[in-house]
Length: 162
Image (tube, rainbow, N blue to C red; front, top):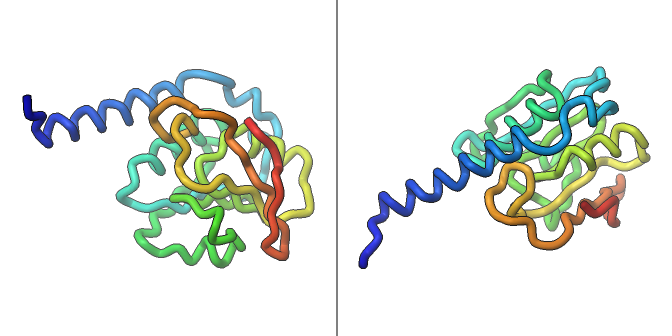
């Protein structure tokens, strides 16, 4: 039996939508992220216009973190990553700027909340790639999500595991 490309696309889109709904309607609510919810500064997510997982992450962030988030479609321009100090090895598909910090990739809000609560002397936090089961990504979580703290010199070390 040959599966047509149209059906494969339909299945892929369906998986993405089901994953998005799971992350939007399950787990902790806004009140569980007091530091993020109380944050008074600017929150901006820089994402690709054509990236579906970026849009799902934006919805996750708005529904569970901060509805005041601004979204900027950057096309193929990754200059925000360079300007913010995201190391090449930790890049992902979207960058969030929260006050003076960057948050790179599909990072769960638990880590963002901890960043804002503890206010460490770093440039930001990052989780490279697009791990299955992470906020905005379909699939089943495999192992821990390892989030790194990035220093002003570009060096990084483990910030937390979720």
